[in-house]
Length: 507
Image 1 (cartoon, helix red, strand yellow):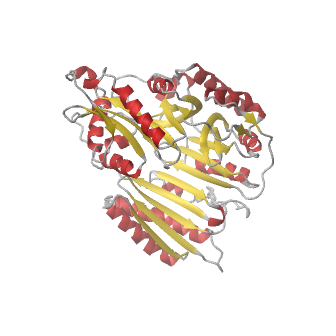
Image 2: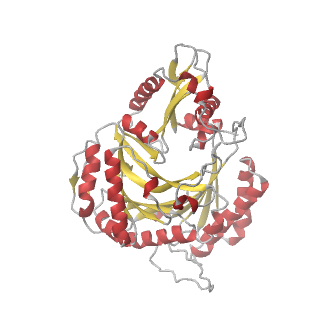
Image 3: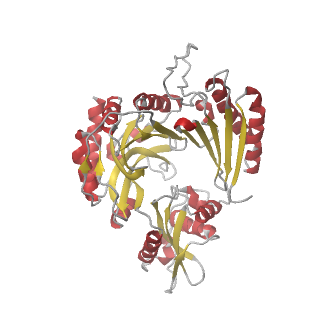
């Protein structure tokens, strides 16, 4: 199979076309190597989503067209359903069987059926393209690709104490090359066992694919015998001007030889050559090690994402009893953890003026101050015209994101409905709300969203099309602040402010 295979199927929005759509999905699932039952479930899920669009998005006298775009890579199978039909809310059926009336001037959220569709895929995203119509994007991760077998039945842990130091030698510090994926996977196993949170490192084909497409930029330390003794890298999800700080790992046998610094310096050279404007990263709060690594590389905390990550419990395997009432009541085998979002400018920002609620200006000035930005505040203004937002739900983590790209007259009710659909329809535990700080309607939206239970979470610099996002969030799960461990003084100050805001909106 080629590195990437793309297909497109355009059909009249007619229920008689559903068998063709399902057959097309079955064919792609077979090419992807999915088991037959998974392919059939995926075909039925896509068929249900298309049926939903056909029945509700088009007037009888103007049936329109439906487009199904498929993309198959070594990492995932993505199916995107496009239509240019009427915007409206898809409502939930009540226990009585009655249907909630649909406001005619609202935006369509393709939520009917998601309760079952979400079980067939790993990621659900719906995107509003304004006059270009609507898109529902379903992604199925292709697990089991060339995964390294574990030599031990139990969950492995770093085993530095079992490894003897390698003989003194010179190392070649070079860029990661195609074909190195298997060696990086072996390195990650030596360092972390199979406990590292980003599983892509254990799938050589995925890493090689991301390297070939430019999504991953990495540096390795190669020992004299050809062993990959260390790796440092960044991820570029959208091949844009930002990169996510990746894992910096050194094999236990080669530690204490300055490889982290050497790889970091070489990686910095490559990042500057690419002309990137910023680095970002997310660090866990189970411990402070990854936070300290970000601090040491000049990144600074700009947001704290409460309960934004779902990890597998290891308390039973390790023989440790649950440490808190929250942990004892958590979903078996899983625990929700908080992440710290870090950022660093590599080039001076284009703008340093934002339109923010007066309530949060003091904290925003502190956040930007840690990044070396002297912030200026703009006056707010009311929304005009049509808005645009995207709604994304990650099945694996239970996290939903409402991203406002353009603030319009109807944006606020769209946010309200999206939050209800995410929490009530698909069971999102956390919902993030991203508001563009360059637009004058953000203060109004922020205050209105806080009345609905959202609270301040921080800033995502350079993530908006024209500037930065103000991040709010909504929790649909219990929080134990005692589980959050932070390394820097400012991160602790930011967390205190966030928890105060959470309590304020809760009242």
